[in-house]
Image (cartoon, rainbow, N blue to C red; front, side):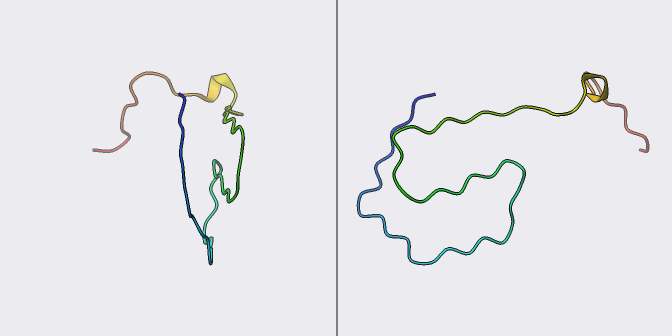
Length: 57
């Protein structure tokens, strides 16, 4: 995906961060390039693939 954003005259006065998750990005400023990647650290045998049957109805 290619995305171009122009935030002309953007001013940040105050920032309050209350929660950070495992896949968080907080950025203020200029970047020429921003590369995102992700991976799973769960072993393949622990992954649930296919239909999951509920334990209780």
